[in-house]
Length: 109
Length: 121
Image (cartoon, rainbow over all chains, first blue to last red; front, side, top):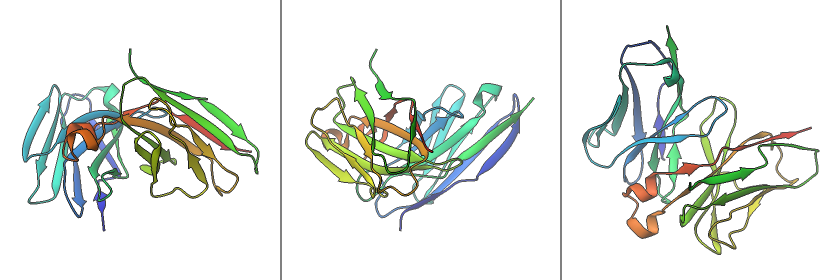
């Protein structure tokens, strides 16, 4: 089958660093994507990894290990506005994105 | 500015009624998608279209119908056959994998509309 697993909730302190993990199981692999969704809003694209390694975009970084079927999203210098749900997604066998259930990031002052 | 427009933002429906959600994009994207999101859940694919006049069922297509007569438009009809239609509906578009391949950013980067929240009374 095809599935993704990520923690349902992560709590961190403002200014700290947090890592959100994602493990996946797919019949073929074309890359791992990350999206952010604030409550009541639409998902917005954050990053995409097709190859192993770390991709950095400002305070956010995304890592992929294809041999381990694993990736993570790293958020640094956390701000209150980063409080949101974060979804990982992979392309499935029908060439459409399969989504994880999402990780709710709670940031405390 | 290019983007995706969904309407209406909020919609109330009586049981037994069909409703149609509008989705229009001016990004010149080939592919368009409809997702359903229930509270605290991920996104589930209802229908998708990679090209005009063609669309495919997603994981939860029962009780829904779509059309893709124009590249810019991908309306979703929630029929009375959908047993539990109360949900947040999201329309999205992408360049699509046909042009760039499944491993490309074109296939993996989706742009979403603001969503339509449907409540059945």
